[in-house]
Length: 143
Image (cartoon, rainbow, N blue to C red; front, side):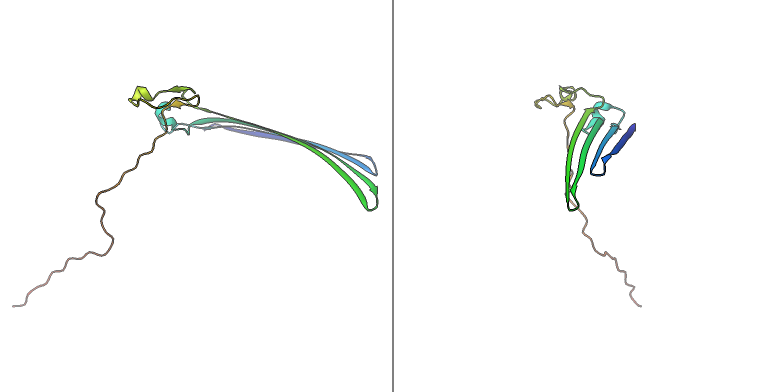
């Protein structure tokens, strides 16, 4: 499974004088990750889980600290955060339903439709053994 992660962090501190201090920082985080289909057939194996993820995050912070007196400090800060996250299904096309190809008709199609719709199957048993101890006894008659 391809998994690519890298990040970058930087910070600069500067003292203008004894009473004024500035700082700035920048962070970048990148992830490119893939969850592959559970079968070699991407259409059948997609099941809303086989996905290529791309995430980029950036953060900028700025700060200014000014000492006004021995008992009074002013601290101003600014921050900006940007997140970009995108995911695409693997082996299928968004907006195209393949359900009719497998005999599944009448399923609504949306721009996010891809491949086959998710399905859930359950099974129940008509008869289940009851827990407990079972025993068979034999007795020999005396002569």
